[in-house]
Image (tube, rainbow, N blue to C red):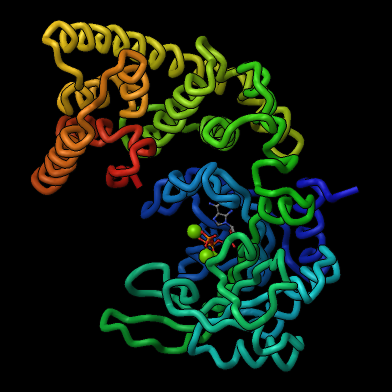
Length: 468
Ligand code: ATP
Ligand code: MG
Ligand code: MG
Ligand code: MG
């Protein structure tokens, strides 16, 4: 039988614990680091150590870190490998072992513990990192064609404009080695998936961009647990692994549909629900509350997306807590705070859901009035302005307005809608430039603007929301 997600996590932690790493619990999704809203990588809790601001009690550590990446929100359900919430497995060296050892262990873990055949693995290195290239080729025995040199965008890690940085090397799984070694394109996600990133923190970058070698070189790595589950459980995507699929099944059951029989859009909605519900239960467990600013706004946006996608697949009433219950029971053995905070989680989710459903109801009423007027005037199209008001004030995605309009044989002026959206983005930008951010009232104003770019994930033409 295939390895479960929990077994994969444990195998990783055991492997590095046996090799002198201190196993540590996941830090909160709310980072100590003030420069990011949420914990986005396993290294974040160790950043003060890497920056030399804190001395660790140990030279090596290993964790499975809860992460949320809102920059991947548009990818959720659409790629096979991206989530908002995911767990990043990591091994860390604080001025202790470095490149050859990190590579050797990364390879040993992948091939001996997880049993990947070398034929199924491809590695990338930073284009200028001849040392890493040589280690993969000479120490490990990877053939040159399966070591890809990549540019700085993918394979050079920086924590900011200045500070510690360095090249990285990533390990990819190749689902189709029979396609040969000559046309390896790591961007091709029908063939490859990145699962393990090894960062070699070896330089300090100063303000003028000069790199000087660090005295204490560090290792920071990240392996995506959900991606490992996809590969090892032989699933077509992360969503069908044991780490998420039960949540999707609960949502499908409420909607009285079957995931496997569903069309593509329905599957996307189910995946969004599965993904976001994991995120929101963990966020609330980590004391985040819904609001119009910062983390609270991200939480609100995720909850509303769940509700919206629930509607898209035919769920009409409240449902989020049934799905949340599955998410909690799925993860409580590893994250007991989910059950401890169950009451708070469910109260928060219900309040947000009920409020949003009311807003949607009001929007629906307004929409039918608009439709009435359009028809009375003998026209066949809803103006971009009206569609935008529905979107902006009532949280109605353009898609939904279009759907309802279509049922009435009407169209929606999408260009006009986009123009309004653009104006809104400009207004938000202008506000951002002129507002004194220390004044709470101004902050709230800004939040309103930010809030109005909600649901942007549904419109292919819209620019990304300004919450990241
Ligand atoms: P990708 O190129 O696939 O977006 P990445 O290069 O942005 O991934 P890293 O920043 O290198 O990812 O993070 C380390 C590891 O964490 C990745 O190799 C992957 O296994 C996992 N990971 C990163 N982003 C996600 C995500 N959105 N969902 C699930 N796993 C992720
Ligand atoms: Mg990414
Ligand atoms: Mg990548
Ligand atoms: Mg990467």
